[in-house]
Image (tube, rainbow over all chains, first blue to last red; front, side, top):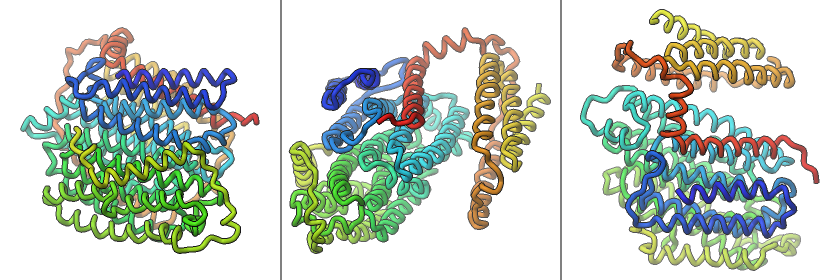
Length: 461
Length: 164
């Protein structure tokens, strides 16, 4: 609760600060301080008795504290790499920061919701901020396209989600998670509109976390948005989306799992397959990462499919987020130097700038799931639990598509190490500050350490 | 009461269909107005007088006028509208029809509860609504203000000219 209030206040403060002539460093400092304070307020709730606020609208237990920590931690990590992004913004700088703060407010409402109204409002605050951030490069046509496309499709998906919530309310008579859970576990005959409500909610949530076949917006939106916003959407937002998705299905619908388990396993199979197959042909690294994020959403959905082990979800989102952020930060620098995000721009990167080349390689290995990286352990945990739950075919498909994944992730590594840069590209300077290098360094170490001793964050919740 | 409900429901569905089917966007807006009118009628039937008034003033008054303005400014017509291929249309009809089938089937099977005639007729007035909104749903109500603030920031950021 205190986290929510702090972030909303910092957002408001930043917005008003835009009236005065305030240096970029000060704005950045205020945003970071706000996030640190919010994180401290959040960590204070760890291992306390679950607390309910405002007529049980939100309820905070260890699950929520862990995921809010992940969201705040990853966004702070990302913000440390934001110097180039925020440095280029000429107009409405403080409003950009305010939007990020407000989107974090939405995410926290989404994670800690105890009432479907809160879930809906959280998703809306997050989505509206993202529609704007996706279109924040006003002179870039593809950014405008991304914003409009995301807005139109997102509004439609929100409508479907809302209709699902309404139907569930109509059947169970409650917006509270406990009320809905009671209705589904009561043993009475369930109303048919409860089922259709459940499936409409499934569709709405699947859209928000870009699960196939509701992923069509993902490549265009991720490709068109500014790269920093893409990194934000594919890491922080995904953590919040899956935390809400898992919580809703785990608490409310796990007693009728036999009704949706087939549907969700088909969604998982479609997502991992489509994500991997379409990534093969991509020439742009940004688009490749967009499709890879679709494919990773499939793995995260497997946790919903099993309907247990929030630890596995937690580990997966953290491993995936750190690897993605390292990849996106290298991409941001290369894109700035070369002017595009093609794989050819990465050729010979290892010779020109060894740190960037190595960081990209480690993150690609982790995303592909090569042993000794965090991504490998994350996949092992999830696939083991899916196998134990008896979904052998899902595991088989996941392993096959992971092998396909190795192909396209290695395309980038091969470009970095085994191709030579053109003369022109050898002269590029990659505009990275020492802060940037330190953060990349921490990212690389985190990926490897989590791959060797995953128990640091696994088994926490 | 029942007859009124069915009449309004029929009107709402018919005009909603016309919104999509007519070619002229101005006519679409006018049919949308009819849809909103019949939904306002539904609110009154549900004893939600305040919601009906708000729906009447905000949606039918303000937003519809805005819609009309935008459409006149954009000068839309049939020729500039992109056409989908037959295959996409076919797929859309099949998937939409399947959804309709499932929805209709489940609503038909749903248990109907007889109307409770001893309802408090004051339930939809501002006083009761305010009690619910500011007591039970205080947090979502306050967070909705953050949502509108975000939308406002967006409108200013995206629509205003850059000054540098």
